[in-house]
Image (cartoon, rainbow, N blue to C red):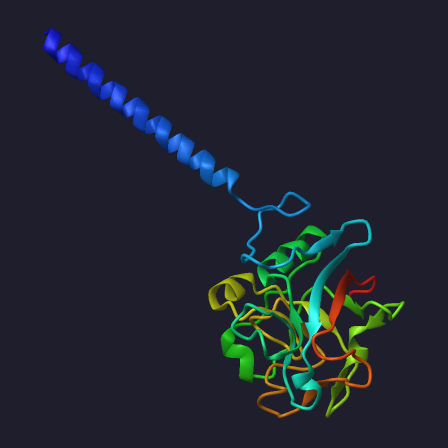
Length: 231
């Protein structure tokens, strides 16, 4: 009988130690979660710069660099995280993780459209979601200018940046797309003025403006604000 009691006590002790170990592991994982200034859990690649959130102004600011390659070559990519698969295909190379950027927009109250799928990418569909006013500035400029001022197009249309959302697609594909120059099912934000396929199918060229932007590699700040009018 005593042997049975001893065996049972040993088993119980092992179970308690195992349970304690699991709790410690769980606590360790939890404490390792990265959060932004709003306390939200975020995903950020090592080396990426933090996204700045101003809740009072309902704005998000990301750092980026000018990519002069697209002064003369067309692209459908406005801003792409430089560590993403499309990191060198954009007018501006983003220095912040697109997944963290998504969460920042959620935190300032922006509503994602999530209305496009990959099947829509050649069907001339238009992205939906919160309307955003986007601006750019850099050292020495002394002011903010509309993002539309740094882009030229073969077919000019008034820019209409929307919070498309697309978080699951962005996580899965890791293209790094932050702002696409036509409606997109992967980019976190995109220009609703141009339907899906406008650049790659219809061949409407979009470029960075060399006469407005500073030289290649210059660091800039891009500001995304919730527009007062969502129409």
